[in-house]
Image (cartoon, rainbow, N blue to C red; front, side, top):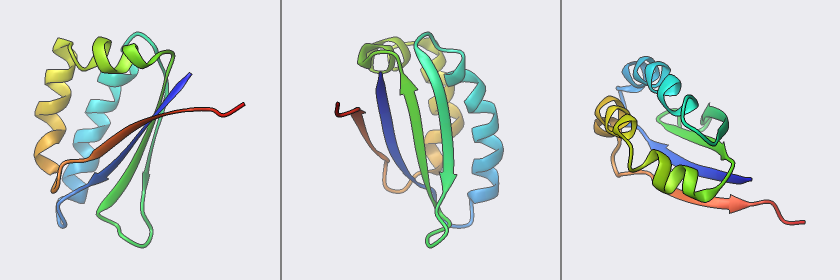
Length: 96
């Protein structure tokens, strides 16, 4: 299992719009093959910053299956204009 970690810096003042758009985008990513779970959290100290954690079966499920899909284009259209700067995305594996 792989955990995608994305720190989402939403433009201040657009948090409510982002939350509504993300509610729609959640259904897109959740339906993708290999997506096991997803959690979006909002920072208490910096309310314009969100943390997205997505569990994928395999790295390729995210980097190829999702990112190279038509569904990703829908995801981008819904969310990418909320970010400044663009999010940092990293992938993590559990350490045995």
